[in-house]
Image (cartoon, rainbow, N blue to C red; front, side, top):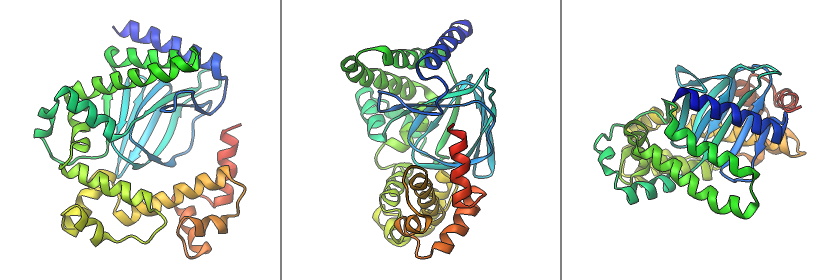
Length: 303
């Protein structure tokens, strides 16, 4: 089985290099599927995961979450159940063998629909809240539909649009049918669980990231005490609600600075800061350099 998986992996690397060359961040013709290539190791970078399956085709990555460090390569995969802050570092990449990874995005509604149709409610019996990131070993059963999804990129757009949805549902079905990954995902997708309630509050904070945060109101909305809300929120995200909102603001600021021709002071007010100097200090603390220097660094990676 390992030989078959390796054969598929090398075929996909060749396929993607032929199709995309050395581009760094690639949004494919499948909306839920994107890729990331880099030809040298990177510094530790602050990011925000969103609900997704992440697979490395070539290379190795470090993921720092809270006070823990995780390492994975092409033999494993990562699942993010909700919007989760982390720091990542590409450890293994060269011009001849660049780091190559893919991400398949989904929503918890997608997971819930698969759970309902396949009656996987048995997983909800273990309702203990856990971290929002999950790592597991890759197997051929999961890898095969991922390969078919990538191969679709050579098909006509009408075929891509129709078949990609079916293949992604197949991938989610495999994930929720597995005892470990299914248990993890169901806690966040099934209504009424603590993890699902916290996830709903995460979505609310994300949607109003530039507004003043009212912890008491959020806790009351999901019928939880402020202390319990704080505790469970930190378990899932590794951050307090206020820290999480700050992370969202700074990630949005980074994207605005990277993709729009706009001054840092304008960005500061757009993401909810009342002081441009405070924004600059907190941005430097989060990313390790000033907004201007950080954007210049990110632009060099994309060349």
